[in-house]
Image 1 (tube, rainbow, N blue to C red):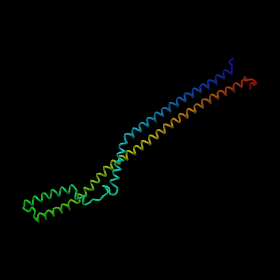
Image 2: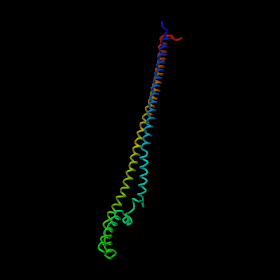
Image 3: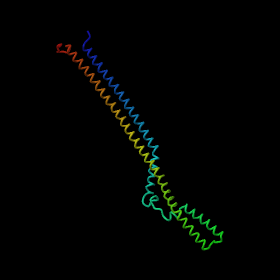
Length: 227
């Protein structure tokens, strides 16, 4: 007849061995999941750093343009000052019309024999006053349009930098979220490993306890009577 102690001991040992194997499998699976999470985080970091490096020139140019625009717009800056008489007198459009008009007028008066006469001076004065009156508004508009072109170009570059900054901020948030998610999965894997290990050993202890109780009921322990 088989020895009950050997039977129950073998059953308990098998339970402990099975629990140990289950614990090892849980540890191996958890480590694989942790390694996968670490690899994913390393890849996420490389992608984020590369994206930041690629977009940094746009953000730096935006910052430079914004600084230039702020300097031009400050009190006394080129884009904040008023249109002056000097601006009008040095306006290329006005200067060209004045030069060409006077040249044509002088040629016409010389052809009539009026060169150097009082009539020539009078005609020249009248023409110059008329040209100034006609061209003032045009010169002013050109002054405003020139300032607007400079402003719009610098503002466009600074807006590009702002957009790039927002994109990098979004990428950073995505990176942080994915990194946190991967870390959480790794932590869950570790927790599952510890839970599986505890459960496996508890099952082994339960098996030993059950074996001891059954053997005790058989009356095989010294000093014990069969129940």
